[in-house]
Length: 134
Image (cartoon, rainbow, N blue to C red; front, side, top):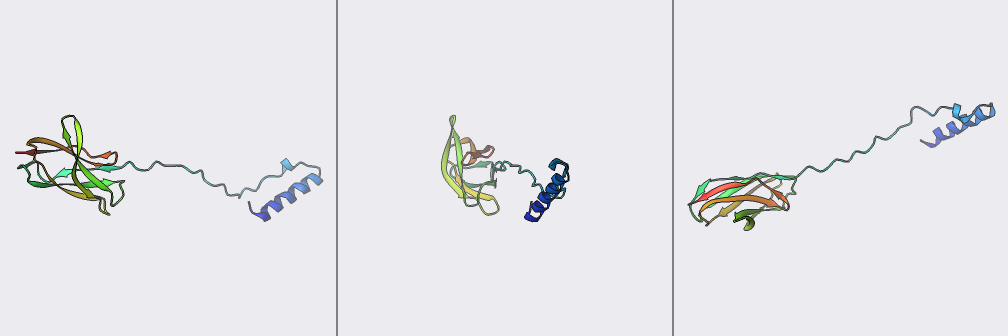
């Protein structure tokens, strides 16, 4: 409430008291602004997509994994991970996230057979991509 409005309310209450009424009989002004409640929203969950440029390659043949990183800051590194036995191992293949959220990583694999790969950035992981090496 601004100062002039407070003085008017106090003046009306004083007049009501002098006239024999009570201050409760004086209504509060109806045009007082009440701020809206602040509602906190959780930040959007970060996501990664991944797609290999080839599903079958020769040993040590280069291919690309491309995708989009949402909720991940531009310039952050994304890394290729390969499933080896029951563990995910980070490979030395990584790339920065571009200003539009896209990324592209060059990959070469030597382990023959079906390789399961994913992209990681911190705790954010992409779906698994399978590439067969012959």
